[in-house]
Length: 237
Image (tube, rainbow, N blue to C red; front, side):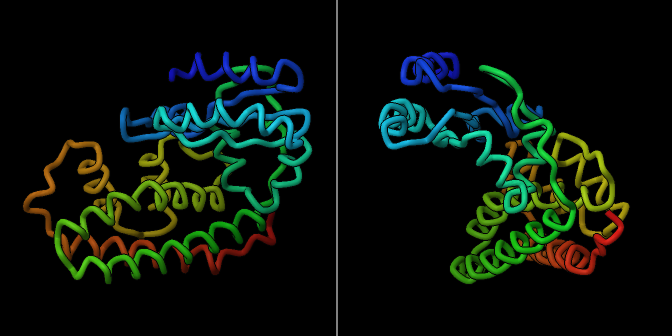
């Protein structure tokens, strides 16, 4: 299913009450990897009652079968009320989105910096714990460790980009550019992330990688950013 077909099916399922359809994430930011990155869709509706959800279910299922995540569904009011608990996602959407149907209902939503800091800290610490647990299950086997780092890379890059927002109001759309900018404030191992990104993109072979050194640098970098976010003072804004 193409995105154009998906939109037509949405319109058929919701002839009234479809307020906006938004493409967001890597496809809108310019760092989308074909066959490796998802097409993320936000759908804003007048209501989300059961009858509407039932009408949308076949469309979402077809989109899922095409290899894409089910769309996020919100009313405009619910989205505004979520700014305190989902600040990372909202700011990322505001930075990189394309309106496919209707009007832009997300651009003016305000996000407070302390809410942002709290979510970054929570997400980073949770993902860091999970990374260590999953490493144990690899038994230190090189191929499994590389796969673990590559599969978790995008999540940590998103969170590092979010951390940059604590230091400057505007951040680069592309995640690797944001990481480069973050090193001016937190001296983590950018080279580790560049190597993993090259592996993920198929630009560098997984053979012969210094796996233990990479994973050690990966862990230490994440810990540095966690500590910086944990101690960051948001009282100035």
